[in-house]
Image: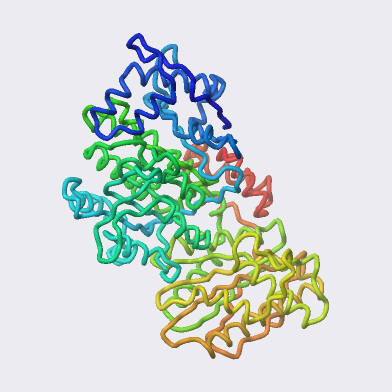
Amino acid sequence: MQVDLAPTTAVDAGDGQMRTLADILDAYAKASDFEDVRRTMTPDVQQAVGVVLYRALGPETFADERCRWVEISVDAPGDAAARGRFVQSLPWPLTAQPDPFSFLAQRGAQPWLFTLDGAKDTLKSDVLFPPEPRILLMITHSQGEILGREHQAEIEAMLRPNYSAQSYASNVRVARKWSEAFALLSAAEVFDPHIIYFYGHGQSETGVAELIFDLADNELPEVSASTIATVLASLESLRRPALFFANCCSGANAVKSGIGDAIGGHVGCVVSNRTVVDLHAARVFGLEVLNALVSERRAPDTFMADVTLNVIMKVSGSHLAGRWACPVVHTNYGQWIGLAPQAFSQLHRATAGRVVNQLDRKAPVDLATSALGSLIREPGYHLRSLVWQAEGDQGVTDLGVRLRDEFLSQFTRVPIREFMVELQADTRPAADQSARRHIFASIYSALGRPGESPFVSGENPRMLDVLKRLSRHLSKKDLVLLVQMVPVAVDDESGQRLIQSYWQVWIDLLGELTRNGRGEEALRIVVTIALQISNAVVDVQKLLPAPTDQSAQIVVFDRLGSVTTDDIKEHITTFASVYEDIAGNQIAEKAQEIHRSTAGVYMPTVQLLKRIAGYT
């Protein structure tokens, strides 16, 4: 929500004096030890500030108890930027209801969460959070007083049970020096961490938040938030982490740019600290957040309020000086979707994501995962095409999303980068040569950054241009490019010719990569081809040109059709915690009722299940 609050707002400090919000925040930000913080943020000041923040948000903000998440957004362009920075720096977790008095973030079983909008006025992408996520632990050891070795050990002990031995070795990496972290984050690497966790000292004396790494030859240990933001911004959006956690002092109190200010627009969520941090509280906080993410598979908006309460209970004196309100959370995601929900007995509704779309489709999922499993074991350059056909209301579009989620869930040690090709079906060129140019432009656009469309800029990309973009992803390690497509109607000859040309282009691209690539490098490409039909089934073997090279193969699924009553029954039983209003002894009857209502047609059935589950 949009908020504005003047720095000159008066606050009763409880000692007979009135102070401005700006004076309180300035002293709070400059505090260098806990005694300074305690003198600045007395219990009276905490309560008075909390009531001011409550009134600024308005009582109506808290009228609906079903949504206890307030995301603060500031519209302050140009000369008003300083005011916006001030509003964002306010300790919003202190927000307190005046009568009866209570800090809303501490309200028992119904705590409220206060976050900052990490990227205002931008489209927020969904976070796809897999089991066995890749984690980069940036934990310093040379600063002995913060017990970095001990903290690393307790984190690893907590994480290991959530991974297989192989996955843990490849998916959890440690960097003590910035050069080590930079190497893992660079464009040349394929680690693509879902979580980046820093534990060490932080400072903000320069006006920009800085993280202090272990000392290395020929490099300064201090790394600014803007430097980290530059590295993350250089990566394609699908390679950027879901969460960056700077567990250090002074990550959010820098005058010019805190951690969240700098990188909030490049990741799904940023967690940092407002001021100096207690060592015990920091370690507990770090473990609580990582456990909620990895073990409990919850989203930040569902666990941060609970984590705050846990820290208050586990850390003696954390209520003093408002230490429990020290964390600052920047959010920049639409939905936080926990993948592979069927693998977990405790399914959190808020992060269950697309469980309704897990309805049936077992045969194509099994074929697709088998094809990918064999593909990632092959060295060199390889291409697989996964082809399916269906009428529009039978989920011709949804299967691509389902396959992507299954791949990310089952192949957790393999970075998978997804791209979406739009063949601009309304402007299909007639001539074969024009069609190839059109397809090159569509693939080139899909492989580029958002907004880099040749259809807008007037570029005329050819095969060499597409190959250059594909070459960004060449690697000696496991890596898969998943190139999806918007379904194309193939009832007429023009649609069929377009698909034929599209597949031939991919065969030709693979041939060029094979002829010109280096032997030690690899690139595995999975191309999905979604055919939208009306009635007649398309003979895919006749439609698509057969590749002459064994490194290119076509996997054809049966036509997608309606689901059965048993499919619906099995789905509801599997995800009973989502369909909590359906009693166990009523599942069979409810499945029959749903099937009668929709005749098993896929999309109407999915929509009805969403309503029953409370997702719409």
